[in-house]
Length: 402
Ligand SMILES: Nc1nc2c(c(=O)[nH]1)N[C@H]1C(S)=C(S)[C@@H](COP(=O)(O)O)O[C@H]1N2
Ligand SMILES: [Mo]
Image 1 (cartoon, rainbow, N blue to C red):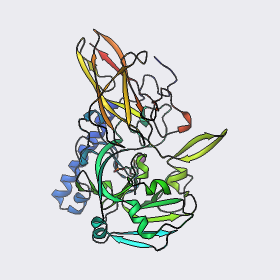
Image 2: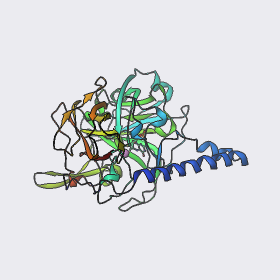
Image 3: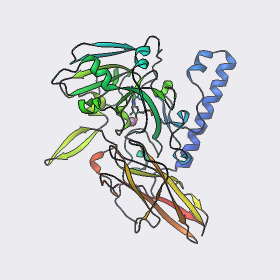
Image 4: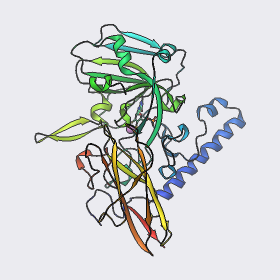
């Protein structure tokens, strides 16, 4: 078995099944307290904590950090009530009727748009996969800081929205502009130093070219429905091909900037290290890395002996589509081609499967490896410069056959 992959031996630091059950119990307690609130008449409290799809894994209740149970993956689009949620602050309660989007900074004419104006503009509908840059973090060793995601901080939805470019065109981007800062209505204090004083808003920037890409949307629909509050109601950015952090929720302000934005979530958090000309450089996290994940079987699952078993999962990449997924059932010694199940959609994951003839007994180490059309191959080794983000190297899934 390969060593030094950056994953702890035996492959997972905690028992994920136990921790999930504990977390589900927490979720069950939440429902009980909701019922109690209803019984005692404190309806306002009950309404602010709606019951969720019972299968969502609670990683943190406040702010909301909920994981899609990746082993239930059975469709290209993730239903809205199963889509993972990553929030840094409390969900801001916004109303469509009073919502305004301001566009200012290095523009010819600052503009302000209301919800009704926005939804009347020419919209596009397209699927896109969002993955949190910390997805898979629980499997890293030593255990790094941050939300302890297993495999499911990734989901795919069909988004309807207006290209950000159309809004920027209304305002007129001035020559010399380099960055477009997207600011959310949510705010709060940062806990860990280095941290600014007082509350700050969630904000991220896009380089002008990505902001003007016609696929970068200001979305107001998710899988054909109004955006749920936790996913950014009434309007969020969707930046296909980039880690989820770029897709700012509860968008209320856009600032066009003539210098690169250096905000907290751009440089201190959601940034990583890269080596350029022999220098270690701090860079914001941007494009999704090529990655295949195994949904089934799960780690330590018992597989029936000497029978066909369908190994399945999803694979995704950034700007380039998935070209190939290979599976190894012998710990990486040999690789065979998996079947790409559905049609390829730009910026979206591709479901895949592989029918494995299980052996007569013993342990097996399963792996999946994706390659994109640009020739990028999912690596076996973790790049330590990535610190606690961009976890895309191959995760061995050990199972028992009997
Ligand atoms: N305003 C705002 N936008 C945000 C965040 C946030 O905390 N506040 N989290 C970001 C991160 S880190 C991710 S991975 C995605 C998650 O989107 P989702 O909750 O709809 O899955 O939203 C991004 N947009
Ligand atoms: Mo994220």
